[in-house]
Amino acid sequence: MRSSNRLSWVLAIVGILLVIVFLMLQKRQFKWETNYSTYSDEPFGCQLFDSIMSSSCTQGYEVVDTRIDSILLSPKWKRHLVMEICDLAELNLTPKLVLDFVRDGGVFLLASEYWNAEFVWSLNASFKRDDSNIHIGQPVEGEFQQIVFKQSATYPEHTYTLSSSLCDYYLTPSDPADTVLFTKDIIKAKKYNLKWSDHVFLKTSQKPVVSTASYGKGQIILCSMPMLFTNYGIMESDNFGLIMRIVSLAGKKKIVRADETHRFELPNIENPIQEGETPIMDHILNNQALQTAFYLALAGLLIFFIFNSRRRQRIIPVIKAKTNGQLNFVKQIGSLYYRNGSSDSIIRKKYAMLMAEIKKKVRTESDDLLNSHTDLMRIAAHTGLTLDEVRQVFQRMDSYLRTYEKTENMLRQKLKTQLQKQYRGTPVDEKVLESQLGRKMPKTSNRTMVELVDLMNRISERL
Image 1 (cartoon, rainbow, N blue to C red):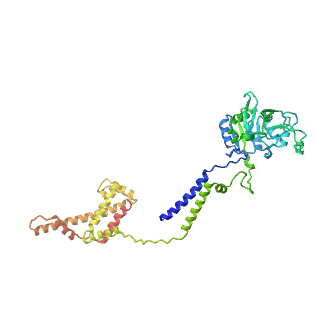
Image 2: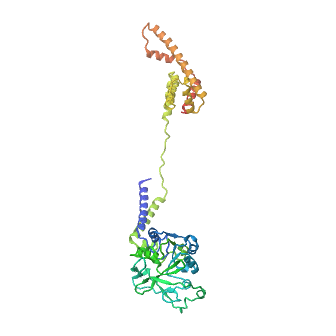
Image 3: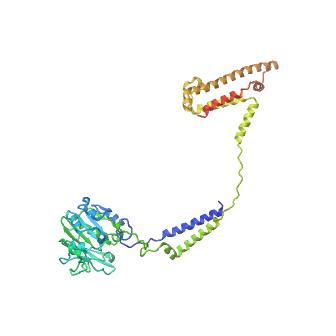
């Protein structure tokens, strides 16, 4: 790859990385819708809230992804504090189901802003007058609002300061003449005589925001501040202390929060972009730095594709086959041995190398392998040959070497005697003797050489 190609690739990659880095460094837009989901880290989600409560509640805190009616009917959660933070109009909940759960010793805490009129009417919830309803009152004006927690046996009276957005609604008795709430279903609904007591109220208007009613062995806790039980609510000021005081109204009980918000999250097909959100491309084009980086990346990619789209003609180098020098060297050495009549020395040197390799890898103890049954067994086990095959190889080599040495000694003695007669008693030169001995020694036939080499290869190849 040429340097220009490398530079183009580097510029393209750097441009893409710059765009990605700029996008990652941008601050994420928060979604300010209430969903009360334990998996949401948005301001009005409950991921942080559930985490803090899990580590703070000594009696235990658990989030259950189950329908609220299934939790109230299950014997597993009896005598626990069941907390529901949601819109009651969306829940499959009836007053009888709640009261049956409370009668056996359970506590039901409901925090919501939009309550079903039939549900509240059936509970006969009255705060200041008998036979009245609870309905949602007027929004509270002002940026901050003070609420008062009445004195109890455990805690003294205390005033808390909250954002007005957390306590926009309060509990107030409704007029029985209000025909909007009195539908046929409400008139047919059964009313239960519950006596409500106020514990937390707005300081300015004295309107209650948290009320309780006992029934059987348990009680019901109603709260009109559901956003208090969110990530945003628990992190504001000293709201954590207010939450713990509200929960303490139930006594020492394990808290079980029902999270069924996933059942109400439907995709917005017509307009997938929620209100207050900005599309990514609009965010890039509205920011000068991101807009410049985006256009530079597009220009770099365009230039890269233009210069690399055409087919490049390259010179194909001619590759010559490498000569096998080792094979020629072996052939040359072999021909020299054969011309000088030293073909037998090749066999002897190969046998010496075989013996050295056997001693190194098999670790034989004796140089005379034919008389060492232990060494022959080791060689057979190492090579995978039978004992008879190994013995046959060394017997054939031993026979050849003994015959060669016997012939060489006899011829050496004969030539030495002839040279002494020729030079009349003068000591014979060993170089002259070896030279004539090499010419006079009978040559081993090619057939015998091939046989001996094959026998030695049978062992050397398996070592």
